[in-house]
Image (cartoon, rainbow, N blue to C red; front, side, top):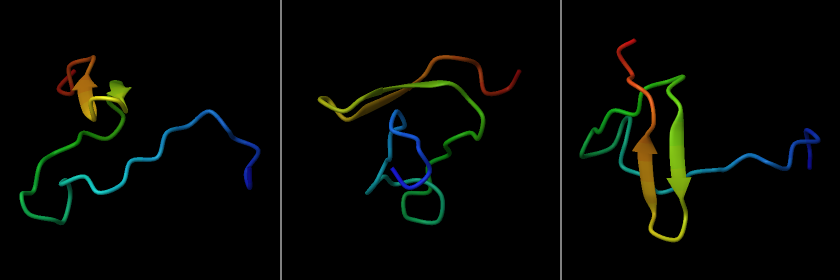
Length: 48
């Protein structure tokens, strides 16, 4: 609401970046989020 944006997802308590284990989540890569199963799936190749 603060930025007039209501259709974005916020991810918390995920082990990526500066935590152990240091999993990689590529910036700018399209993903699919499933909040019911807590799955994040890359839907495009992060190396293109």
